[in-house]
Length: 507
Image (tube, rainbow, N blue to C red; front, side, top):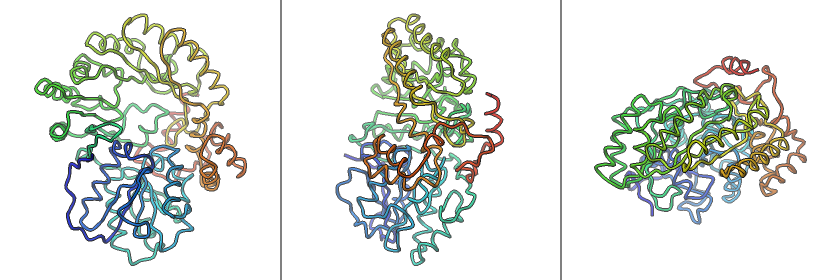
């Protein structure tokens, strides 16, 4: 059952039919804050008929031939497999160049294509780069008002909109950056959602810490905060529908009124027992008794902390400026104030990493367990993947065999300690690295990988058939003067010279 927290205009005339596609099952779409908000924004337009379409959609209100515009939310590199599958399912040619006036215009938005759309450029008629709230509405209205024009003429008009990239009309594109004058929140609640009946609230956007590997930081600068009074209003709105509240943001604890926000939620939970609240992320240096007490009062028994690396030396290299003393202090405060455990997130394969850094992670885990008996400690580890627009965009992904050796070593040592550890697949992270730094030569390679089944072996087979040197894209350390596929995108901040200086500071 789905409950909309808004009322769309009734008795619309469908001057434009818009399929808003999510490349995963419906339960995931119903838990995607950005997707749901954009869906609402379009649905509120009086003469546009929008339909949510997911990979498990059985029937649609509109026939494919009636659709004027198809949009895809593109959040993860491997989403392209489901995007191509959905285009195939509805009879839309995979390549934009093969579509005619009888086909819908197809576009995408989201972090993957905002960072580097080039591997996927031939699949989309255009791409929204950056924040989509205002651009999407502008795009839909422009297309609706110019339906009598040809595809080519409409694309020329779209190319003039800030934040819109038209691959067939190459030009510099300025990323769209929105001021957070209003709070983005869940617009549909559902017991079928992955996060069942949870009201998600965006507290802030971006991160000021700028860890050198982090796309979420550099792509979303400058950091922006929702006003406290607006957050209070939206929390009250959410609580009229559900007791489950989740606060979202890359650096929630950096909000200038973060502790006032925690107190507001704490007071609400005392007045109304049963309120559940979760934070999407917390920094080690943000753990204070009031924060933990708020988490515990609202039903959280465990939380997560990102330490990224075991040694202080490597944390400084990646600009994760937290000390071991702060880590232990955070756990102590958490345990003393009723939290039952932490899951720590870390990475392996980071630039300049040595065996000493791997051993330091094991040592950190061992000392945490011995210092805080009875406190649940677990680790989640991923391998470093270079991302566009970050200081580490020039760094290659470590050799898969080397990473698998580290993975096996960590699993063995953590097993000895009796600490649970989950480590991402180095093989799949390799392909993610290929896609992250890919370019416009990838089209047939990606189509073949999709048609061969989308497994790891399919990527390898497709790359060989299309003579794609995947090691160059994934593993090579690129020269600072290399022309990068995404150089045509102008971010709000920082300039490329700043990224170079950050990179050079670690060499």
